[in-house]
Every structure is written in structure tokens, then in C-alpha cells.
Image (cartoon, rainbow, N blue to C red; front, side):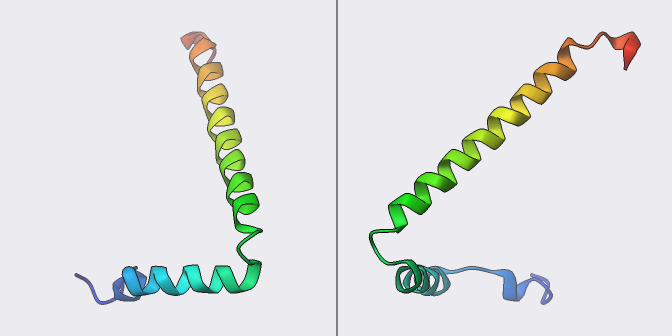
Length: 64
């Protein structure tokens, strides 16, 4: 593995540290709300990109 990308490797200790920091910053009660918001944002992004792909398919080839 290239040594440039070595700091970008995320293992179990890094994930545990991230989870602990998030718990300390937001608390246990706020996390489900954050995850719900993140999930709905991802869903909206996927729907928007899917709609964009559908529009591209409807345009006749001669107008592209």
C-alpha cells in the first residue's frame, strides 16, 4: 500500500474513537434524530439523481 494513503485507512480503533466523540458531542438522545436526518437527506439525493437520469433518457438522441 502506498504510504500516502496510510493515514486514510480507518480501522476499528478509529471508528470507536469517532463513535465516542459523537456521543460526547451530541448525547445519546440526539443521535437517532441525526441519523434520521442523514437518511432522509441521502434518500432525497438518490431520488433527485434518479429523476435526473430519467429526464436524460426521455430526451431524444437528436436533441442531445
